[in-house]
Length: 498
Image (cartoon, rainbow, N blue to C red; front, top):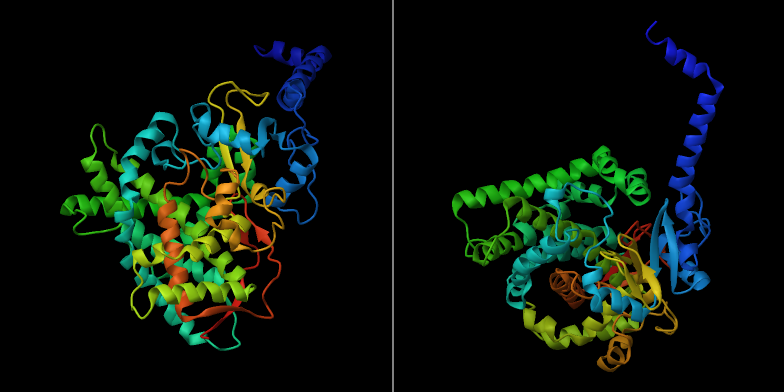
């Protein structure tokens, strides 16, 4: 009886008209009205639709994200708007504006826009924001000096020698290998040992839990990624529900936590361990002012391992592929390596520092196949740049792949030509024409480590072997990746001793 008024209300047709009207207004304000954002600013955009935004615009069968950059820049210009669901975002391909945003006006865009949401206390330097990022970066900078990188070579060398022994078993045969997979296993062993002194037997064929966890983190479900991009407010929930991602991430974090706990109990110092985790612990002890908590150290070590695992292995694999299909360049590189190493048994840091052609080859590989093919920043305040208005909170996308393949900057952009990276050629180009590790204060802090790993690995491999194509080699490569480029079908190559 006491709810009779409710039944009467529900029976009233005007009530339902009101509900429908309010619902329609909410839907319009939430999913339709926001799509007028760039029209008000006079900025061109691809066709946008409620809920999906511009996701489906210009998308054809087998069109990958990195290719879509090129298509849309050609169609809409070097600056245009996008909609991630109903959330507006800029795409900026103008080099002068990129320099303004990433360097000159860094204080206006100091943060990376959130992508895959993880617990706040476990955020690594890649996703930290504002003063917290600045504080952590200041403490970590001494970890990546040249002198510290020299200590990493013996750790890297142990894993590289395992790879060389594997290659000896198939050298000069018709057997092809998926070099991308082999180098992924190598990279995991190196990063686990270098980051926190953990032995990972990935190359032995063991079903390594650490390798499985890292792979799961790099391959979240399509649904969770869609939610993170389109409905950021639900991103953390979506990633939590992605059990494979969550279990993988938690496993990596727990491994690092247990190592820190053990070392703190034993009073371990750099004299005992040369890995990056110990360098961070010692740098934290030696820092003036407030140091890092154990949770923050865990986050940085985990972030470093995850950021360096697949991106570094992809760089190695892409370079091996490019050398295999360009044998003259491979021979020139092998000649430089042999000339510098001479008859010395070990390759030292000083030796790889002298390998200028190796630098050029790696840079050209990173140009053609930048592992991280897009940079993302977020406007901290409203600001103007080159006549465009960037409201506070709007994400700004920098298309690395499209920039690296712009024929106005790089003639014949698909051609593999290390001569693009002579000193004279580099000085003649715009400073933002090449940015595989980002540009400005938020460029990759682990860049020096990654390049040492790539250079040492290639120098040791090419000193003894060379890469050859096989009938199974895919030319051109098909690429895939949500945020990082990777070969879609692996890279099948043969290995020769002469």
